[in-house]
Image (cartoon, rainbow, N blue to C red; front, side, top):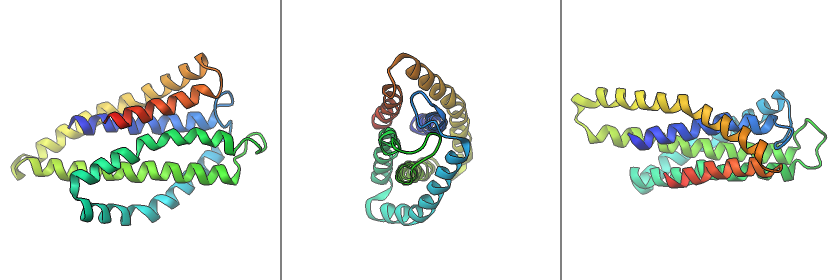
Length: 189
C-alpha cells in the first residue's frame, strides 16, 4: 500500500509540474495552453498504441513483480528527459513548439504514462492476491484512501518544487533540477 501511495504522489506531482514547465517563460518552453494540449494529444496517440502490447507481453514474460519493477524504473525516472525539450525547441519561434520537441515530449510523456500504468495495474493485481477475497474490498478502500491523500499532496509538492527551483536557480537549471528530483524519487521507489 505504501508503494501505491508514494507512486500516486509522484505521478500526480509530475502531472502538475509538466504543464508548469511548458508554460514557464523563465525556465521552460514558454508555450500557450493549445501547444500543451497538442503535446497531450500526441501523448495519447503513443499511449494507446503502446499500452496493450506492453502490459500483456511483460506480465506474461516476467510476471507481476518484475513487471512492476520494470514499470517503476521506466516511468517517473524517464521524466529527467523532459528538459531536453529546451534544446530541441531552441530555434522555434517564441510561444510555439518545434515538431521535434512535440515528438520528444509526446513520446517521453507517453512512456512515463504507459509504464506508470504497468505499476498501478500490477500493484492492484498483486495486492488483491495478498488478502482473502473476503477482505479485498477493505484493502482496496484503504488503498484508495491513502492514494487520494497522496494525490491531493502531489500537485502542491510539484508546484512548490517548480516555483522555488525556478526562483532560486539560474534558468534552465531550475527545471532540470525539478525533473531530476522527480526521477531520483522514482528510482528510490
